[in-house]
Length: 169
Image (tube, rainbow, N blue to C red; front, side, top):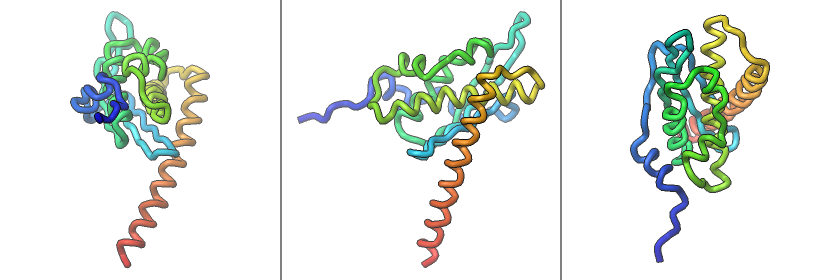
């Protein structure tokens, strides 16, 4: 009896061959997010160029420490966000990512929220760095995301210290 496939073909395609992996060294915006429950961490880098008076996301790269779905949706998000205006990219939601991914197990839906939050944080970073107005909703999202990331980093620190104690003995 063959085991059922938990992930869609699209998820597996992006997991096996992720697109736009890496760092943009001179990124215009960087978003770092994490999930307290599972420990996934995503970093998203954007490059923004002015084209005909519009700010366009011309390049997007990511680094993700996480599960199959976390890696896949990070890759998918880069394809969705690339060549969008900053305003268009701000409207990308986890639902848009899930439409591209196809069904994922309910316990993995949070990965799509992480991806959309990483994009929000990268755009927040870009706007702040360039002293541009930050929409009120994005400011609220940023505060929530930063608070969650601090919890994830603190928990990671606790695990690391615990592991070091065990390995030292």
